[in-house]
Image 1 (tube, rainbow, N blue to C red):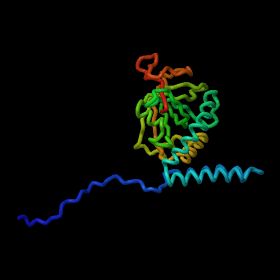
Image 2: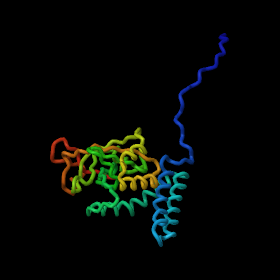
Image 3: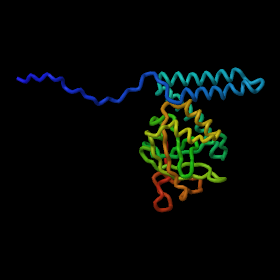
Image 4: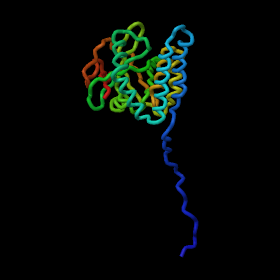
Length: 244
């Protein structure tokens, strides 16, 4: 009979830590404070500004903060409904007619289930042939899941004095520090900074997405080819894309 009573070795591998039930995403608190300052600044500096408007907007920001802490899924659902039926249609209309007061761009993807072309306004994070997007809902965003299905996308942005559709290949970057990348995207640009504040306030789990733009093959037309077709030039990926 063996007399060895050495205790069995313990498994030193650590299981992945679960996120606390109540937590504040990085950047949300700072974004909420900046948004509140932008609301109260005009009230303090501009005579006869509406106190009620400042109070209502501040209440909305605080409500979003509490909702994010309690349930990120509920926050994503509420913001998604707001964006889908109010904000996104308005921004798409403005960008279509060439009005861009918020410095946005349009991302076009192909729906992973429907196969139809989908377009969503995103922050303009272009630098050269790189285009960075900070997804405010992370992998929950429909257009992010569409990219996982088909990375071929198009981005409508201003090249010189004209707006053009530029094809590209999108890559999801979960290892990228989304807040650090967002600070680089801002680059002291006031419209990009304003969009970054909105992303932090409305978002729950920030995720960086990179698009490698193909500027040499960018078409100047406004009409996208049918889903599943390829561009006229050899080697250019399909231009149609969608949100599910």
